Image (cartoon, rainbow, N blue to C red; front, side, top):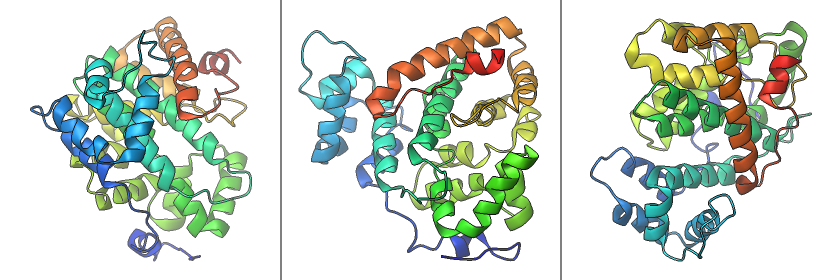
Length: 298
């Protein structure tokens, strides 16, 4: 257990002996996803070299979610039918889920965090597709892992985060702003550091590390749109929230990105709710008890 103040660097908190190691198969798949010349044969190699991952991938593609009429028994066939990016995202999720600890911190629920992460990932991908961005699948992965450092921080700094969590509820403020006041850094920077130590692609690290900087990203031009989608996703309500306290800020950001009316936003959120409900069981997660559309109309 550590203590942290404004004088404590993130490197001191995230010592190398604290950080879990990500399976090399997941890292290799993510690196392959950055190559335009890589196809199913290349993606199949790291999966087939990891028997546990191979079994999970085959279970994933044979689930009712995809509804294939016959059983898929070949990894190359699975990659061809489902897509290399979808399977890479699934493998990355499995890898991170397996190595991130449950901090047993007060009311914190690790599965609740992954519920939030999945919904934000689905939203970021759909928003990227709405904006016709080329890397919409990469946005899914960036949003999926944007909060992955939080359990490690809760485990390492429980006393400080107890105060921060109480203040977040009492003051209605963003966790990232409270973190910067107390430490001089936030969980986005922590997650980016973790991604860098896992040797994940730099563009992916940037998507994770910038997700608390929505205003700056919205003013940064077309090149910042992908990161802005991930940052906007971070403003969706948590599954444990009773109200969407940041909806007005979220809506303003959405309008700056898309220039669409509230009806179009509600249509998008309905699609996110439907996709989340379909996808959650594949990751052994419960469906959020309150949909995004219900949050808007509450």
